[in-house]
Length: 169
Image (cartoon, rainbow, N blue to C red):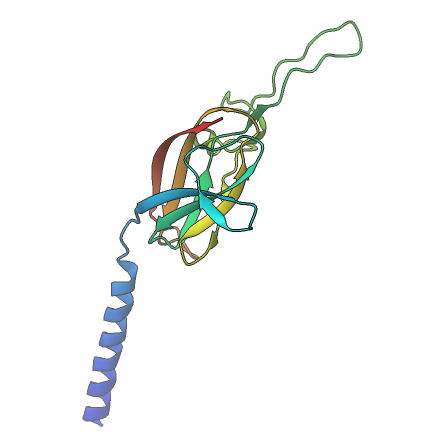
């Protein structure tokens, strides 16, 4: 009987030790970000210049469990409204912390505001990817947020990685 209890205790201790090792999770990093465009033959081609108005595929090479992309191409603030009686304008919509209420935004500096949202990604052999169309030419901040934990827990370790400026022609 002592042998059975002793072996059960050793197995329980080994189980708990292995569970604790799973909780030690490194903060992920981003190895590379590539931007592709589908050519006439239907194959993805790496692009150096991003065109406006045409869909591109953003691929993030990372070891993370989850990834979201914030391309920064859209930021639409809810504007002032003019009343029908006398042309009086109402102030811009702001929240209780004096931040603007956005109709939509994919700019990471707006994270946490109403209407701000990053792009959902899917996993492929190359990495996490999403499709995006920059609506107008300009220079935009591309930010990637990656995490290795967070499933049913408050203990997740996100890494916010600013990729840099994307020049859209």
